[in-house]
Length: 339
Ligand code: EPU
Image (cartoon, rainbow, N blue to C red; front, side, top):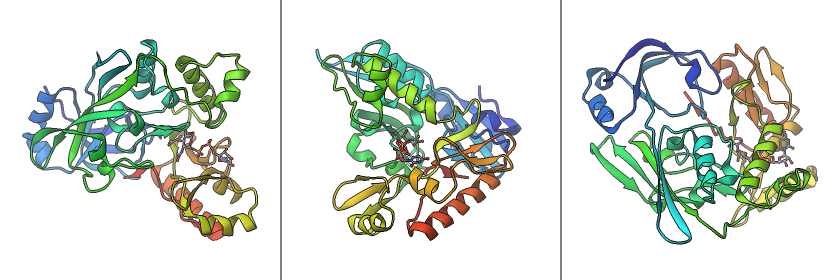
């Protein structure tokens, strides 16, 4: 049974904790419910916002339409060989709990992605990544409903067109598909341990942990907790901006003026700049106006200390973009969806 709730406060459903209203709100838990929803006049007569964990959006106003919260649950494992398993998770599962479930079964691949907020179903949309791993590296397939053709369909890794914090679902397929389940290819033995990114190796040593997938997850959790705010305590959406990719030429130009610029090679003749460094260097780290602020330990994360409105956070984001552009002539692009 679909239950449409009118004038619904979205605060518990977005990790920024913004108290914007939806004209209607409904939870969908099964494929049959999703198909029934599409026939419902409230769906047909309103604009629709599909919501997963609400961890990658900034609500700047009330939503004059129907918010559909996707709550499909369930996980399964299929061993396809001595060395590999395919695991499927329904889209409404919490991402971190799903990663822990794979690690409890000694399945390797997702350990570097521990503690990323959000749900499984939204992870492929922006190809979530951390500590040298992106979900595209272990993605097998996803199941989605095609709202245009009104049929169920599957996407291969190639069809998803994954790139840095990007996929087809943010581009030409935007708004057309509802992702309900995601499959991953994971290792059962001889795990490929990725410890070279960031401080993983140092953290393992600091905690005297032997290299293993479970211990890498522990290290990643410790590192994330040390610099990223917990959305349950301080509202936030992780990195607010993408790390900008510039030409080698622009990188060289910036290095002359800012020798301590932080950057990483990013494919052909390009460099990825640490946006956190640019924002900190432009003077914003720890900035606060009212309840909207820039996190004191990671300048790439914008925060809501309590009662900030989405519009205030958006204004802060725009001020940061202008200031970074003025200082470095580099454009910062938002990673979160601004609604
Ligand atoms: N830095 C600063 N000041 C800051 C923050 C960063 O100077 O305030 C510099 C430091 O030199 C630091 C470097 O930037 O070593 C990189 O910082 P960090 O390791 O925190 O990573 P990031 O590039 O800022 C990206 C992802 C994160 C992910 C981490 C770890 C993006 C937009 N963000 O951040 O993802 O957890 O790497 O892999 O790519 C997210 O997408 O929500 C997210 C948190």
